[in-house]
Image (cartoon, rainbow, N blue to C red; front, side, top):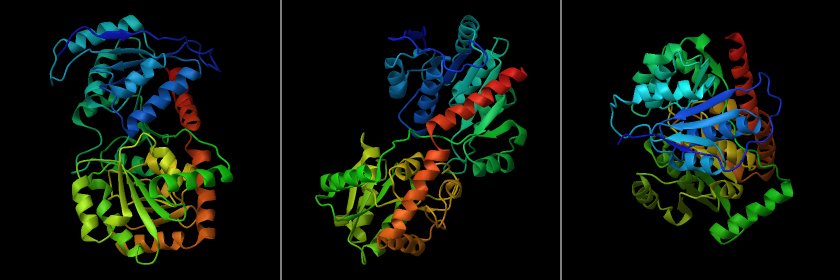
Length: 399
């Protein structure tokens, strides 16, 4: 349904400004609704990051806030929601958004790449005083062959000051395949909150997680954190694991859930490894479980996959990586230095890579050290916020 938008007032005041370059800058973070997902997590980190640097930030959800939006509201972020319902066309939405934007006088709008919100808010913002519009893209195409930028976004694309690509490989795809002008794109990788721990702390947590999940400390664990959808190609991982299991006392932990769970459980049984595969489902402590991974793995098909946050988190937890060479994996995994990359669909190659790491503790430790350094130097939330802030300030000055 549509109705009067709701406004949630903050429960605490924002911190004192830190290093603001251009005085009071009002930023609206805009989307349709905020479910629990990788893109939404990154979006929330940006909201918090700009708030903590002293910017005047507010959140807009055209529909309901959703779980991530409610978290931000509970943390004191001013939130606006309920502008429209589930209908495809709402003739009252545009004039109400126009009044809203003119009243609140935002200078910057940062979108989540929701086609509905990007289209309506962009159109409504023309002539409202908004000077900068930014939108990240979180996919490299869509499963089934659809483009990353849906048609409503393409209709207003020229009004976006910059489209933010999260990896160089994705930028190349957007230019060459989707026809986005190269000069409109800037690359800013997604970031994760860094969890600095000593080697001793990581080892203790690893043993604790092994005891909790496997019931013993001496097991070798291959772990994947990914939604159970076709593009993640869990079948390849299961087949590779069946090969590894012949030589290594190992378990495969599958963290995540999705529509293909029963099918994958049946496949594990067909391969005779069901006793060594643990389907752990959705876990609020997923990042903690990653400290129990002796190897973190991703078996995705080409395209769609771009810069998987779960692998970055596993690398920060000290896990070496084995993954298919898809998306931007070659940018975040130094092949032969922080892990191994194999060709998409290469079951034997994946099995060999997993086996080599599990059977060589010195190699695993070396990969772990390099991977942790890569994440902490390139893929932190702080680095992501800093680069986004620099871009925003450059555009504001140019305007």
